[in-house]
Length: 286
Image (cartoon, rainbow, N blue to C red):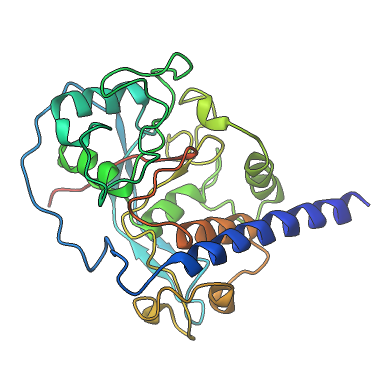
């Protein structure tokens, strides 16, 4: 009975996520802005700010992603990753120094109407926004600019998934039932974005909050919108993602990961969502 109840719960969440994805896709047009390939973001010098985010070294390796061709391994290089997601306080300091990203000044092409919607004004958090909680309601463009001003970047989907498949003691915990169950339990909890960073488990690499706090932007969040038989066709027909992406999943029982991919496929670069934050990574200098 307990197993059946769990399955019903998972299926309900999964169906809800896919419905949202499909509804979003119907609203899109062929003139949609694609932050990965169709928009040239102006290179500019951002004003420095005081944040010095702790990072840890993640040793690279290979893994089989949820979406792949013939169980092919994907190589992930060594990189540094922020230990915590970017906080309200950190992002506030960024917008104070880089006014084009303040809520009253940001261009609509780069952020929708929900951008920093809960802040009192351009430079003041709301009374219920904790300085050490993860910043949310930020667009991909804003997150990308924040990382760029520090000489960093957003993680790719493969980099994020590679690091996030770790639990406290194992680099790849995806086959451990409790690991997946804890993620699914979190998906059902309301308003976890209001919690402070660093209160979830510390994973194998020494990184917190990849699960249990907020969802996170990746640099190529909409790259796995697959309509054919191969991961390599993800750049084609990428609005036709409703349900079709599941055809190429390597592990259809990995509901937690499937929901992340479905969520990523349902959003656009200017969306600002209350449970979506970000963190930065940095390449290893050679």
